[in-house]
Image (cartoon, rainbow, N blue to C red):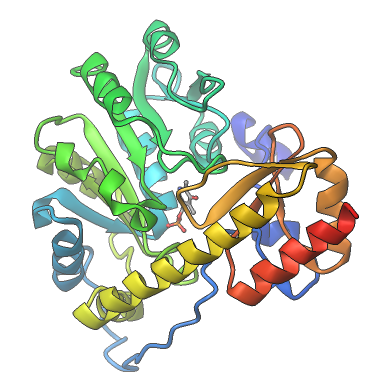
Length: 346
Ligand SMILES: *Cc1c(COP(=O)(O)O)cnc(C)c1O
């Protein structure tokens, strides 16, 4: 039956998520998940009725957290669905393209390819910043430009002035989608303040990372009202299950936000611990990271990744030469990982 599938789907390499790769162990630092397993109260009942498409309480709570108006917010099944909706709503197969800047998050290309949309690749510079001249030279037929800050897997922030130049360069031509999946770890770096100035700006957010709710599947797209209305046309009629809204509202309550703040500080402290520890090893070059992960370059990255795997320490190998991405877990997990790497090079 394989041949019945669309040609581009037959050719598609599915996104290899950390979960699919598998592994066995007790230290899971490969999916940028939070080490905090917070508990919630869920009301069982009322599930005979369909959910609201865009639950008002949830939209209100996130708008207030993000500092935007409710008309600028769309909620979906994770930020990943936001990527999908944008491509579906804005790109004409066979005509339009998306542009993205590797090394970066894998879902932009997977989503585009599954819909038969061509991709234009403009690699980041050596410093992992936007190559604005090369982007400008490749904007032909591009409707969406995806950029990611903090960037996954490199961990660095994109320069704000470059994002502004990109927004100006693409005005009336393309939407710029800034993926801020990790922005809660460095909220001062958000581009949210630019939404009212640049109508072509779109921001992706999620509860999967700093909010420790990867299993909930709840994300947000922030954009001007027209863009949100366009996305509303293509979203499923009931994208947000009732219990998801209940839990997300608790996470976004005053108490929930205070807890996130505390947990973010804790994770950032562990990140600093791991960063300093790794930087003391001559076989390792560790890059500054702004999310809940660090990218490190080893003299023998693949071998180190495998050796850690065999010890039950599951990290993420990266497409960048000899680099491994390490999610920041709790202090014990960071200690165990650092100790393993130290001993590996003894
Ligand atoms: C994790 C991640 C997402 C997806 O988040 P979900 O809300 O869980 O779908 C999007 N972008 C980047 C860069 C990520 O790392």
